[in-house]
Amino acid sequence: GAVVSQHPSWVICKSGTSVKIECRSLDFQATTMFWYRQFPKQSLMLMATSNEGSKATYEQGVEKDKFLINHASLTLSTLTVTSAHPEDSSFYICSASGQTNYGYTFGSGTRLTVV
Amino acid sequence: LAKTTQPISMDSYEGQEVNITCSHNNIATNDYITWYQQFPSQGPRFIIQGYKTKVTNEVASLFIPADRKSSTLSLPRVSLSDTAVYYCLVGAIYNQGGKLIFGQGTELSVKP
Image (cartoon, rainbow over all chains, first blue to last red; front, side):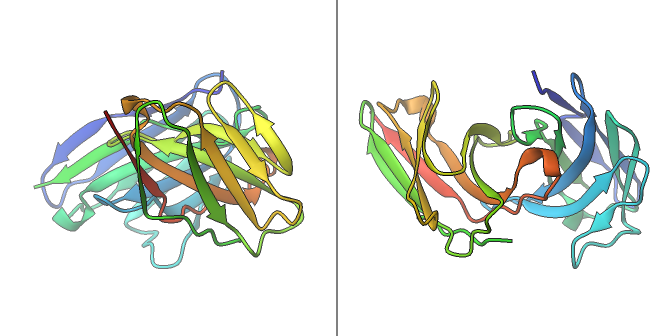
């Protein structure tokens, strides 16, 4: 139980384009979802917290107009990287919390490469 | 949010018991301690969670002293596949939706 599916697992896009990453809780209702970014050899950095039906709360230093987060339902949150640049290349990971016995469940991550 | 401190790296050999200690001096009364494992290019995987004393599951044990200012993750008889980064996190329990802040983690290397 408590499975979080993240899609795509990897994506390559051209500089200036936008990329959408989906995070779905498959067998539980995720009242809160989190988005993290991880650079090579570094820890996960929390970008934002989203609650279903409300605006996301962004961590200090994270551009909300660049990283658009939507949490329209209890099972789906999306992260859109707008006007991507090479420095946005990173590993993006979502996490969901809900009424489960498995703590916070993480997705498998999305490797974004901007060329 | 309580800050955590862990060793940056540890080395071990197959079959040994590995203990990773995490310091969290500012832990709050309603905070739980959770450990995650992460392999390269994968999301973190839940290992174990506890509040006090000792918790054991099929993969690990978690020891928490009475003052809760530290915790120790114990991995019995590690194998090569246990090579990963281990994160200690402190925060509100899962159903309160509190955000989890990751520290630097401990990179465990298991050698044959």
